Every structure is written in structure tokens, then in C-alpha cells.
Image 1 (tube, rainbow, N blue to C red):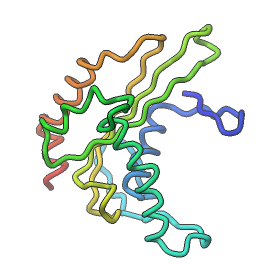
Image 2 (cartoon, helix red, strand yellow):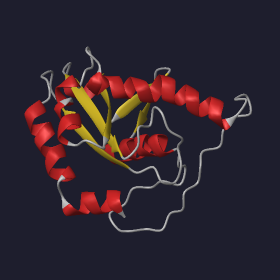
Image 3 (spheres, one colour):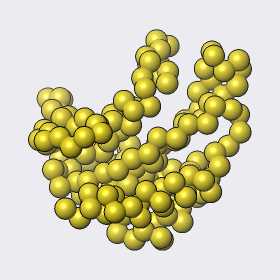
Length: 172
């Protein structure tokens, strides 16, 4: 994946991109994805001294980035509103998403769509980030100008959330 910052592209794998979003949602700078169990300890993000307090930073993050990602699914004009049914099917979980379109040079003028979906055990718009915050995420990509197969994405998410390992993660 290529992301840009002021016109300078950075190459990031979907795995790393998902890891960065999960770190944002937990405010855990020690979060690292892996395929085996590990004992990473929770390490809160450091906040710049220009923020008067940690609470001021978290409030800004919640009222701007997190609520925006909540509205991607639950808002009337959200770009992933076709996933709204998940909230009804899985009460007690909170859903957030970020969509994006990238016109990559290798796509020969065709756009690539990206979608990150995050589920949490907490309403991250109205709670304090701490070590008890659990999140799970999916990264989807479609490399053409068409839309996502929203039914397929919902099935993937539902199958994951009904898995024993998913339930164990959120209840341990």
C-alpha cells in the first residue's frame, strides 16, 4: 500500500497499516500484531506537551477521528454504511471503519479501494483508553474501480466474530 504525506509516498503493508490503526484505537504504543501469543505490556502513547492534558488529547481524538470512523458505518452518508447491520447482529460491540481510494501507478489508471473495520468491546467515543480496551480489525482491498462486495465482507466479519477464538479474546 502506498500512503502519502505531502506528496512523498511511503510503502506500508496492509498488515502494518492494520497494526497502526489498532494501536491508535487502543492508544498502546507497544501493540504489535503477530501470529503467535506474545506478552506485550500495555504502554500508553506519549502526548505532546502542547496538549494541556492527556484528557484534552483523548477528547480531541475521540471527537474528531474516532467519531468520524464510527460515522463511516453508522452515519447516513457513511461510505461503509452497508455494514450497519453488524451493530444489530452483535450488540455489545462497537464498530468503526475507514475507507479510502488510491490511484496507484501500477493500476494503470484504475483506482484501488481500501477498508479498515475495527470492532471494540468499548464505545471508544465516550470512554477512556486503557489496557482493558480490546480491539479486533480487518483490512480489505479491492484493486479495481468497482465497489466492495459488501455481502462478502459482512460474511467474513460475521464468521470471524462467531469464531471461538474471537469470543475467547473478548471474554478473557
